[in-house]
Image (cartoon, rainbow, N blue to C red; front, side):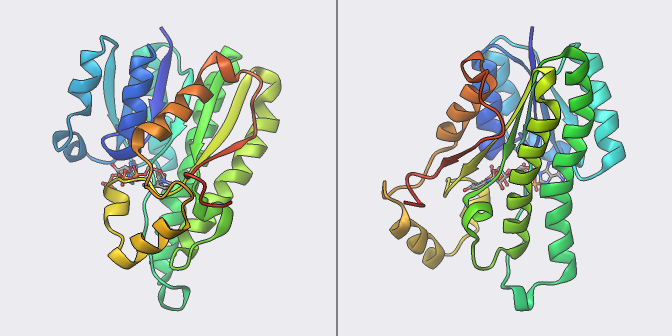
Length: 244
Ligand code: NAP
């Protein structure tokens, strides 16, 4: 049975993607940074109810060596890695003038370097399989910029460049690599925004509502499926018409 590895999947968008791919019939390798994230969330039980196999792999995805070990462990446990979803991400917002070097570097390490780490080691497994699907979580912040998020926007724009590069490097091996760029989706990450920030965002959305985690998971499911077999190097914006 095919296997999907989803980073940062204890909660939020990652958990919704993991559950959707489980319903699609994939065995699921979950990942998050701490055991506590899984104790506080019920994603493992929900996936077990679908009847597929599920296991959690605790790992800081910004740690190159730890990712190598984790990818080996996932391959040993499930035999294949058919879908990789690079979802783990953080924010450390602040206007550029007040942003510290630490705030900047941390977001780059977790959001951007992690994607290199995972694609390098999982890509090598997929190349031997001569098939695979990589789906990266970018953001509208990476497409259009967002005040207070110079660090975050930089990483999400970088992910788009990395996605196109890997699509070109691995396409001949039957591996596709695409990105999704969510707009404003209701999760613990966006719960941190102020009311003023929320109001401002809503005013710019054509559909006049926030997105749901399941609306992201549906597009990821399509990009993981055979229906998207000739789609690679693309960025699909899922924002309710934020940019029009
Ligand atoms: P979330 O609710 O904060 O979930 C992200 C998960 O990743 C958390 O469980 C988090 O654990 C984990 N994580 C953080 N650092 C990690 C690390 N170093 N290694 C492994 N796991 C780590 O975020 P979300 O809103 O679901 O966002 C998921 C992805 O979608 C992110 O890449 C985000 O940038 C992107 N996105 C979200 C939105 C939105 O509106 N929510 C919009 C555009 C793009 P901790 O809580 O312990 O850090």
